[in-house]
Length: 349
Image 1 (spheres, rainbow, N blue to C red):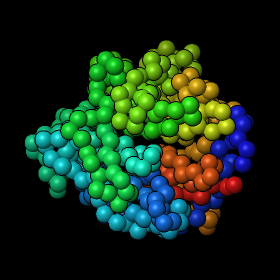
Image 2: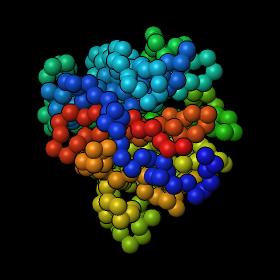
Image 3: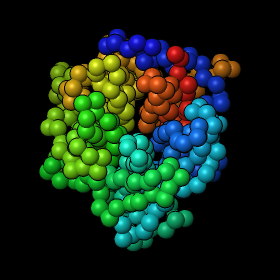
């Protein structure tokens, strides 16, 4: 499909979804899907998971990066094992790892991810009260790292230091949710989430920035402008936003960059309320809402015509087939639900 700046991504999503689009692991909350094509016709799904019994917000304290395979990009996927486990208090990413973004470049594979550590009271079966002082300790140690392997089957080499750490160069309090784009003119760009300077748990607000490097392992230089500043897009609103945008996926196609981003902080950018939106950019640094801005609201109609409303529908990732977006994967938590699952959605051609 030829894509111009008139891309209507929402029209690529089937109006009704098959329940075969769902990937679950009973007993586990699953999140952060990323599909990669491997050798010999195998497709690999990397995702994060944590025990349902510890509660949904334990993504912050007890996640590990798991891995499943299939013979088709759309699945069904079969669990294979743990790619990146918790590795202990002595490591920057020792207690929880999540936000998978996997790329292949050259002869190597790279998992970009968020990791953190918390207190020496961490235990694999002890839940930590959500939004307690202890929970925020884990949340505020989020950093971006990378693991490298010669094969998607591992073993994965992890590093003693994060790839991106909090600093005046990169951001405040947290650095997380990496998405790596191989730039068309050479080099590498990671888009990520951090906080502007300020007090409180959200500082001066959650912003997304990008960093560029000549090599997948850096060194990285931050581009000075945030992707989206809601106060600039909504000039009539003067009070600060906690979230300008949230979970995001960027890619380059047909001479421009595109991004699917989540808007969940009212007042919203559009009349659609909480939704996944499409942004575009000529240089990947200055972004604006696309003409067809709605990608997906927080509801799905299944093939049996039942409608399901979601509390969370986020962490978008695309799998490309011959340069065309072929599969949209999302993380989903139903309204009133306790165990999240993944949606792996074949797109219309």
